[in-house]
Length: 481
Image 1 (cartoon, one colour):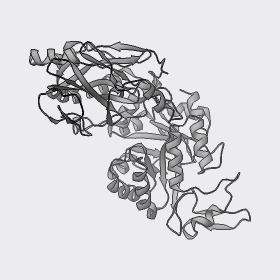
Image 2 (image 1 turned 90 degrees about the vertical axis):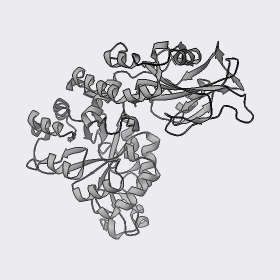
Image 3 (image 1 turned 180 degrees about the horizontal axis):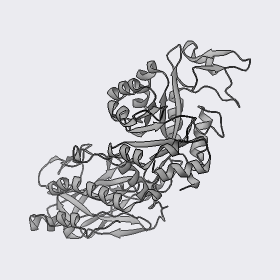
Image 4 (image 1 turned 60 degrees about the vertical axis):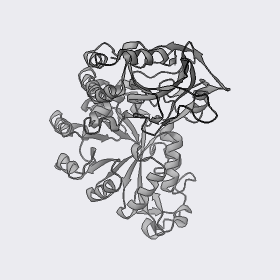
């Protein structure tokens, strides 16, 4: 599916441009070094040529072109390359940057390149690797950030417990961007299609690198590339819808209250166990204590070993944490849970059980920079609406306890992303008829299913085409895919 000879791409290459400017950009285009197992290569680059100092038109984090900075070799021109991939191993589309500085004699004297939202000098041990008039730059396997040595990639990988190129492939969905604001609006189903496609591309690096060189025809002026981007993204979403069947959907695996089948519910050990068993996300319930601390608790009270009831809202954090929750586990705070989510690389699916806790929850999510990776669920649409007003970028799931609720209207009333049927007496998979699922999809909504741990029920949920499944035994969610 990673085609480069399609009509949408041809329309970009056919754009009118100055032949001399393109030749100049081609003469100094960086040579990129890719891992031998890399599944995705650039399909185009938008160039901008600077003959005086100026600001990058395409690097959104900010970059200033300085031709003659103090202490650096002077340049007479600089070329910015905004390099486009259709795919990163984590999401649909990738845009990385390289800046090449050229002196009066046409020699490359400096080069810088992007790195996970930042940028760096491409010298290593004080030397810039150049072949002819073109810098040599390494591209991170799957993620495509640039570095002067692959050692940077190895060091970065040590910070993560789970591999971005295999276990985490596709978790980033459609990468949202100001380049196509208002022109691309991915639905939960489209995000699942992206995840499903990328799950098929999972790999582990070989750490052997091969050279990639841009063909001159793939170099276009930056304005042409930026105008083309939304068409390209929408084209890929259309292709995925036709080429990926429901049987191949890679739904999100959500550990219910951690991994409640294996560890005490709503505890840190449960969250870690869920990650160990392959969960993408973990649910946990939040309430607020008498002293304003947000803690993980499903019921409005906690029992101690003597049978005494401790209401969460009327107890202090110290009082609750003095109670053994089973196997030595204590009631954790939201901050502790979010730290575990970050370290274990699982997304938090937060179930609101106390509306008064929302301000503190918002602060914690922002402090841990997890808003874009979180889902909030509740039976209370008013609570979700309040939270959405404060953190517009979060995804929300409206929970409902009756098959007679109009879930679509309920979700639309608060701008929810997902609907989640939750009841004990009816087989939820039987409720998810093609007609019901179709109506939810037509409304641009996603579906989260839950089950009691029986494999037959899981298979039925998958056949229904849900976006995510909550399970107290996350390992079962891998068996059926």
